[in-house]
Image (cartoon, rainbow, N blue to C red):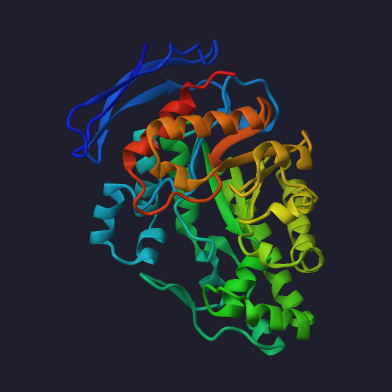
Amino acid sequence: MSILQVSTSSLSSSTLLSISPRKSLSSTKSCRIVRCSVEGTTVTERKVSATSEPLLLRAVKGEVVDRPPVWLMRQAGRYMKSYQTLCEKYPSFRDRSENADLVVEISLQPWKVFKPDGVILFSDILTPLSGMNIPFDIVKGKGPIIFNPPQSAADVAQVREFVPEESVPYVGEALRRLRNEVNNEAAVLGFVGAPFTLSSYVIEGGSSKNFTQIKRLAFSQPKVLHALLQKFTTSMITYIRYQADSGAQAVQIFDSWATELSPVDFEEFSLPYLKQIVEAVKQTHPNLPLILYASGSGGLLERLARTGVDVVSLDWTVDMAEGRDRLGRDIAVQGNVDPGVLFGSKEFITSRIHDTVKKAGRDKHILNLGHGIKVGTPVENVAHFFEVAQEIRY
């Protein structure tokens, strides 16, 4: 039997959790157990010599797997001491996310400790903006700031289509190195922003609570917004292909703010562009899994499925069983544990994981949170999440 040992300053003594004996992952894989320490926590780290396609890709395809693959949005981030230390040396987010060496190092921090089944590129959905002639910055404590937000057709005409080889060569380099480092033991994931969400940031000048600026543009000058949406669509098609050609084995599309639209407006300002992206990418990369995530998407689930993506990522406001019923069994699902659960007890975390997996069923499910890991999440609870998830057997 394997043992997960947690030692923290908040515990008077070590806590030992017995885990049931694991079954063989497959006849083509062998496992050995090593120990690793991080953030004052000792966790069991598995080394898997992979000789087959990553578990995540097999699950998305509907192949028979013995457990759900697991990774967590924002699994590389500020809850980890190693990331905090690196931030002290490189305080600018753009410095950290636009340097191939740092991107690789940060992307691999959770991989080295937790061995997730997906290793996602450390980047930001706004990274392409500079290459599109949209100056921006990401300021600590304020978030993204867009300088001179476009307001007219003339402004949108100045937006260039994105050429990733010229503007973000560090992304391609980082993905190639991640594939080499991970060595097919997990799927390397890329990601992009969806046209409406990117347009929202650009038109609003940054983050927004009410989205009044983009809605004003959508409802008073729809042709201007459609022109911007089309530029982002064409650019994201190019960017997804670039990431795939550089080593990404799946790509997640974030349309976080599309759920600010009513269903009728989603069908005009988001859905057609998402469908266009999926159709174009599938023409050149038919086997590349595309994952779509939109927070607060309960009212739009059926419409998200109509985009043609391979996986819909559910947030925690949707019951997993109900989401499955609404989406149908032909599409894979990802999610959807509330990130706040990671502030609970280990027993509570275990219960919620098993509840989610049971409701998702054994086919086409990627275990994940319904949003990113929150700042301040106890690292030992993240370790517990992965340990429990990796011990599940259908």
